[in-house]
Image (cartoon, rainbow, N blue to C red; front, side, top):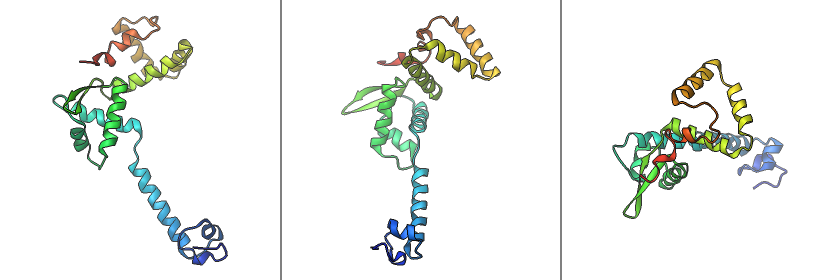
Length: 180
C-alpha cells in the first residue's frame, strides 16, 4: 500500500501511484488494467447481437429445442442463465414461442433476424404520439434505392399508407405465431 508519498512503492495500483507517475507497479498495473478492460470489452456482446445469434441458432433447429441445446450450439462459454434471459426477452418481443417440456420450456422461432428488427421498429413507432412525423422523418432519411424498395413492398402488400395502426405489417411475420 502507498501513503501517497512514494509512487515507487505502490504495487497495488493505487491512484496516488498513478498520479505521481511512480515507476514501481503503477505502469505495469495500468497496462494490466488496460489489457483486462480490452478482454472484457471483447467478451461483451450487445443485447441485439446475442438475440440475433440465438435466433440464428433456433432457425437451424428441426423443431422446438431447449435452452441447453441453444447454449451448446452457441458455444463460447455463454452462461445458461444468459441464454434463458435472451430467450425470455425474445418471447416477450414475440420473436419466439415456448411450450412446457417437463420443468423447462422448449423454444421455437417465430421471427428471423429481419423479423426481430421489424418488431423493434414497430414497437418504437407505437411509443410515439406523432406517427406521421416519425414515419415522414424515417422515409425522408432513406436512400433512393430503399425508398423505391419500400414503395414496391407497400404496393405488393396492397398497403396505401393510410392504415395508421400497422395492422397489415403485424400480420406479416410478427407475433401472430404466439401460442402455436
